[in-house]
Length: 272
Image 1 (cartoon, rainbow, N blue to C red):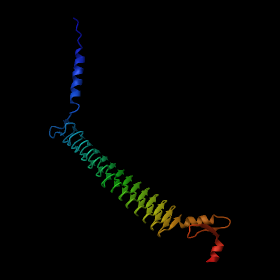
Image 2 (cartoon, one colour):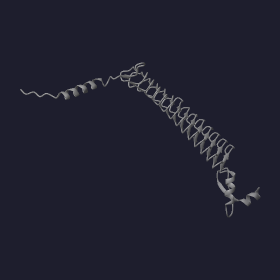
Image 3 (tube, rainbow, N blue to C red):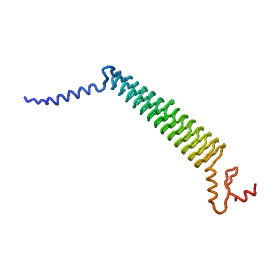
């Protein structure tokens, strides 16, 4: 009778494969220094680094000196990184993701709201939920706020602040541009140093300002300081535009029904 035998190398590989398969569903690994060992508390945890710790019951990862992954499916990577929330991710030295599904990326980045995201050095995404802060020292302070840019500050509920040092500090306020500032509720400021201070006001243009409620200022340095006022361009721009006109100059009028009309300037002066 003829018997065929497998080579020893094949037998060794098969045995190794069997061993890996047998332990794949229940793996814990902890590696630290001689003085302070890493602690892998769950059966599917990976812990690497001096005094790194993992908790929860499954799928936690802590990599780095004193890194901590506190709840199920949490991931902490970096020295003193802390992923304390369920399913949270904290990557970067001293970064923190302390709420459920929060994400923090960068040195001192802090995501403390549920489903919040903080990206950048010392970026902070707070509130209770759904905040986004992207940029060094960017801050999204209340629910559903979004701050993008270095030192951008979206402090109002549902506010949006995009641009270096931009500010949207009232509920649903929107600021776009370097130093843009929307401080009125539901106000909008667009342009460098544009300011929308009144409730539901709109300022569009560099250094434009809408101070009154429902006011609109459009143009560089345009200013609408009274309620319901609409200003297009500043006074100097209007004068320059008028001087450049030719032919008959007319004034645009509007009645209570919203119907537009025109009249000659001379007729208007006589009518007064």
